[in-house]
Length: 206
Image (cartoon, rainbow, N blue to C red; front, side, top):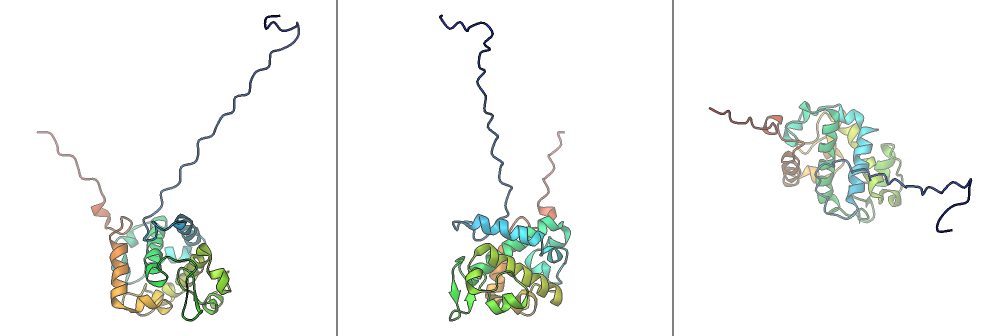
């Protein structure tokens, strides 16, 4: 009695459940839509698409990139992806005001980047209907597929309102809207000149 076990009986050892620490989310680039609920998924989806079928876009340096991102050419492709996500978010402000379910142009344009189903089909996007383009990540994936072709085809992002992104997105035709987008991307850390991001040397003791 008194807690004494019969001979030959081994006391049970309680199992210790080890809780794995939650993985910390990777640092995401600054975007213009980051205050919108659910936009983290858009950012992650855009980065994934850029690293997949958008890889040729990341490896290309447009002639007018200085207008949009002065340090772009000096960055590796991973850092360049951050610029394009920021650019997409700034363009989305003028296209849909960050509304994934926005439909404009009398029912012709759909989603975050206001893409028409016919344009999506022309460029081989997975989304081939208006309903499919209302899914934020799918819309962004399609936009990246389009930009990968047009920016490389024309050699520019579209600083003069012609070619590149301006070939398919109306806001890029207007000087004030282009300037607004460029002003946003240029002031982000992923576009500032590398010299401004280096730590200042500590003063030496005399």
